Image 1: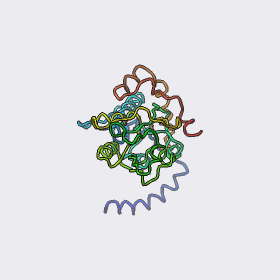
Image 2: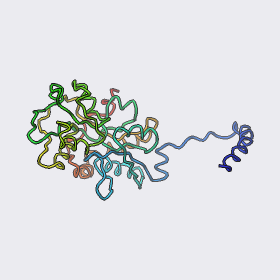
Image 3: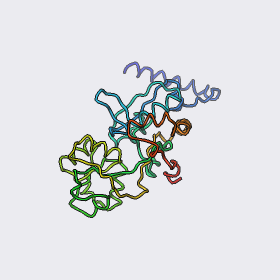
Image 4: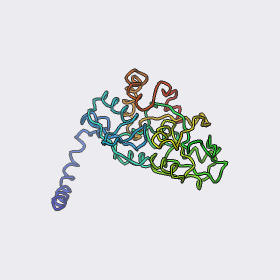
Length: 285
């Protein structure tokens, strides 16, 4: 602390001298995130535990559709090391904007509201939603509307997800919505009968049904507005458009290739999940 204080006193004298030279010195531009990660060969990704999009395996490995795509794309940009920061879903955008990591690689849906907060790359997949319910779907739930019509029904929704907005738009009251931090909590809520159903992407809910055992199922005939089809993408800070554009260039050349489909196949994705819309369309641009 004393060194800092002394430096501060000397610094006051230096400022005066430096001021006289400032007019003659070239203005140094700040290093962008793209320049930093290419210089250091390292990038930090933020993710939340949601299988199959991004999750931690029992041995501590971070994997999933989005981190694996991030590894491939950033390698093409000369990045050799990808560090991952586990974050609750609802804290991903605040964490990105606060500089805890450089990119969100969590399968995050592109929505107009989120487009005001982050700079999305173009989508890397599209996927519909469905419900996780007890085997046999005892309450006959097949849509958000069915839940809204049954006021005694509870729906487990992961906080901060697009599905929370869809639920409210369908008329589901807040006292019917059980907000939870992650998909494990969704599974536990349905299994313990604290919720009658959980909602999320079809791949996630199918994965939870498999994990939950024979007492659970993901319904196959979920009825939903086609506008709710989710388009997932990597997300960057609004100022990092050069990084976003560099990623997009690599992404456009790679999506749909044999290597891409081989990379995402272990997580349940195939050609049917290739996106048909751009981020500009989804953001309303």
